[in-house]
Image (cartoon, rainbow, N blue to C red):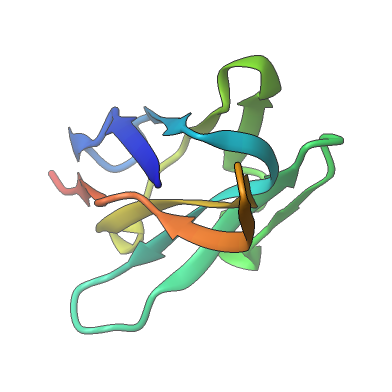
Length: 120
């Protein structure tokens, strides 16, 4: 099993910033990709950004130039710096990890989610 500790969500005004962090722990052999997804109210979950263990990144078009994903491989932790935030960034943000646990084939694991609300 993988346990996630997500933090950094909350309420922010339009134009403001937040930083999300997600630390994974458990019987982890290797995490190939870590990322953030979000689910706005009444909508489907969507990719925000993801990063490989080599540091390759990709972003949703809607957040390019505003959000930055980074990762500390030694700590199995991923961060999402969100700047110039907009009301449409309001969503539950979920941490995701694709990797290998001890004795378990490659799996796709999810955090419990953290609420981000952008409102004046």
